[in-house]
Image (cartoon, helix red, strand yellow):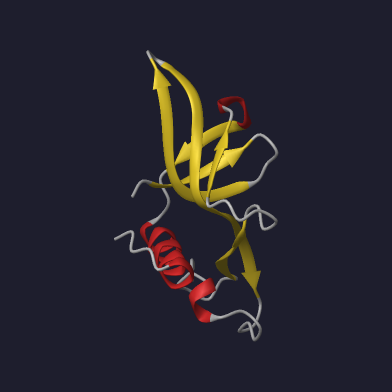
Length: 116
């Protein structure tokens, strides 16, 4: 599984198993498998409504706590693999280990897919 963070032209930050179709040295299209928004959320107190598996603690000291919340990227479709044109992608990045593991745990629970 090639889990990556994808910064979209719209400003959306998406986490997904990313594959690219390449012809020569040109990307023809990008496929996002099981894409989710990845959003950094400042937490002033312990969240009550979000489930623990939906959050990743990104701060270990007494400064403001940040978590990563995942929500489906395109919730109105039943498609789990979404092709996008390369012009919509600004950059593709490697997520931190904790973020990747949390994403993999989430899709395993939701879809029964083990990406580890």
